[in-house]
Length: 336
Image (tube, rainbow, N blue to C red; front, side, top):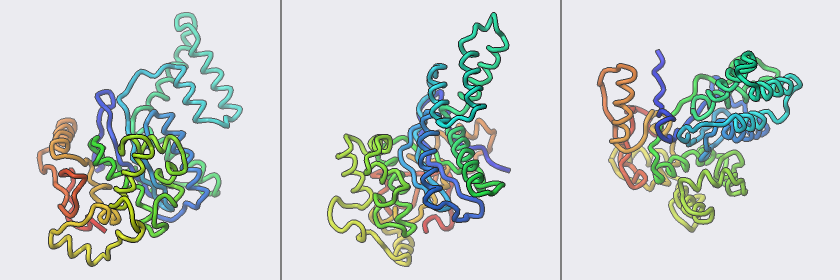
């Protein structure tokens, strides 16, 4: 049986999630055109849902995205309409007629035209259900892209292998910068590039190219204006502000295993070039108190027995200058 997803009530406070999803059977389906379409849809859906993309990476068979979900606020009908039109830039004739009917219904008097009021209420409720929620954002993004992909490739059936994974991340700049760097280094780990700025389909490359939303996303975790944020973020990516950054951080797998077994320590930039399953499968990531708080809420909400507690990450790196714990302990293949 599937376990309930751990989420923060958006009505209470802002939350940050690292989300990821993979294609059916992990097949490498996404060529450059598909990744470009996904990139465009990512930003459109994020604006519609009212979430902020910190960074992302799209590869041939999966994607990662770090999103900030703001605390829920009242969204006016005018704003809902603006976002709806933004999401459908090339509306069909049916969609255009429906939109006109919705505009009329929203302006109608509920007392004199209860049918129009009911139509407006139903439409408004459906749109708002997708806003300010990580599940609504991911569902809409994956559905829209799957429809485009199946239609353009003359295929049918599921595109994604399962529901998306998500990790609730504590809202601390150093920790978020570490997770963002891990995401942007995906193409480096895959051997596609030596510097993520050279891989078009990730948040850092877009930011370097001048895309304002991508820059603002990284500035929220790196701090300062773009020049300061980029300098600090490059240091997080490569462990140094100068020198041969592209080749200095590679470590052989056997050497990594040796350091891990001996409980030694490596530079964070070196560890980030390895696959860290805690960042993908840990469910909750942050300080021990943060993990304990959300574990307690999860038990109360789902009537679960107390079986385990927060697990500290192995001290193989200086994790963002502070201790990091996770909800799920990974006994094997935690790094790769």
